Length: 498
Image (tube, rainbow, N blue to C red; front, side, top):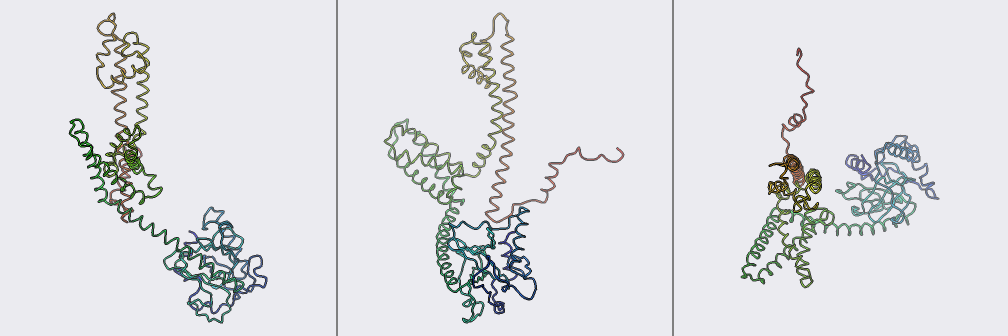
């Protein structure tokens, strides 16, 4: 619960904070002492005299014996809430450098005039308790419909002879303050006129900024819908596939000498322009952080940048390497097709556990390579002459490619038809690496891939439900199946008599 929520509920149930029918007629003018507010608070004359408690616009009961006592109750309540580590305020009052205007005023809370600190910034009209640096309420300037003097308030029915030295701030119905009206009282007509002028100017500037921002966001939402549509993805996939076909045809005709380079260069420029336009649309639709935090968007950016660089900087030395990198444009197909993207994301998520299994297998291979150099360097320098040669030999052995010939070359003729040391060396390596560790790597990959794929599908399902406004489908058996999946049969008590 926070003040803004209480304000909205009060505005919907109890009406606006500035009464629209009659109550303001029965109120006496909130008297300001000639010297203004004493210690930032109104005098005793501004309190109610009937002794009944009144409810202020934050839903707290004030004793209405004294405005000072009401403010003390509010301050104690705020201190209690801070003690309970419950954040009910809207933040801190901005620094003096951000304040356009500030003043001690009286605010109409139901039928009580209570002292408040009113702060005008570039974006909000902030209301705070006297002596507190916490915001108790705020009015966005772009949601102010009009600001009127109390005697000119069209809802109050007051005549121009009224001597109320105050003004009313009217808000829009569908805004943050739910159409509430705020009534404030100042010390003089000059101060009221200053507030009217400053609020009108600041509200106009805020509405202009919001309108400009809203228009840009409107175009960005349209671009986001367009780039996220199924039609856009299909067309992009067809363009990437067509680019792949052109690259294959260019490579095929390159060896026969019948290729026309001008045709393929023109097609390459066309595809580069189309891909650049597509990237520009995605960049505009997802600017800024949504674009640069997505790995697929960054991959598209790198591929298109390389293509543009290879066209614009064709005269530079070494540009042929960039032209070779244009071949990777076909990999953009992974980012266009959801099924392929899901597969790649699942593989990437499963790479860390698989890497751990690979490290274990690598350590075993390194150990056997060192042993092979120490044991068989003199017998076969071609296979165990150095660590790198021995490592390549052991890797070749793990693929079952020619390991029999390699092992027989190491046999000592004096040991008979089989050299026990060589046989033990290769047999243990094959058992540990090929029969044990490689299946473990495959098992870890499948397990983590299945788990990552399920998480990816669940994430896509939630995103689709949030986008379409529909809840994720849950069957009636899901709770039962979830319990059975984690059911421990060892905890079941045996039947009586057993």
